[in-house]
Length: 267
Figure 1 (spheres, rainbow, N blue to C red):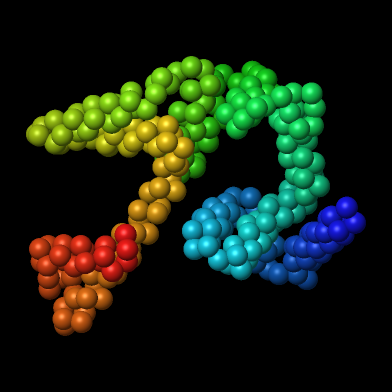
Figure 2 (cartoon, rainbow, N blue to C red):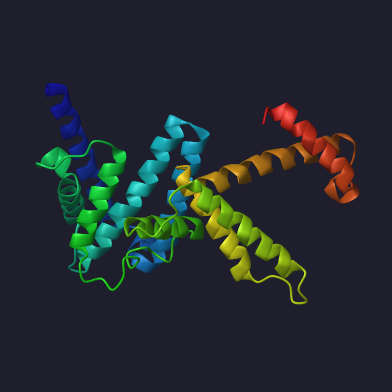
């Protein structure tokens, strides 16, 4: 326990130092750029840092992840300082709020509640959240419209599931994908072609399948995009060795190299 207490003390001291540095940057005589920022101007940086954390996780580098988490924490401290200067909340309020929420929503740990497995934990969490948010016009009201669309779709489906609006098993979800794919094919044959809504319906159905498999659509697509980057870079490298670039090649040649990249990269 002594080691645990020392760790917590050290973390608290470092947090205080970080808060002091941010205060100094915002005070008169500090940094002009930092002084000009507000919640709106910082919003883009918050999103950027969150994605860089995800990238560090995918790359599997502890050092990189530590640095990127620090950059993300800085954004929280920055927003807290801006709010404090305006007479609103401060960093302590943020910590207190999330700590109290964790305790409330884990009655099986901090109270007399019980939860035998992860599914029951999630069910209890949503039930408690529903009581806390009583008065909202819809079960879906708390799902942010500003997050990536794949994540939004997954959250909407998960919320609907808590109300019993869900397929009984993955077969229904798979059939829905086939149905939406057929509708898209039919739309392609129309004079005006398919709409964004029809493509969106197919993507929404695919996200639903991923949810049944406990796979996150956003992360799955990111991994596929990274794989595409690697394979296309392989194509460019091989073409360069032949004194070409993709614009000088054709689909047949590039597709052959693409297949070679699968063996080369073991994917």
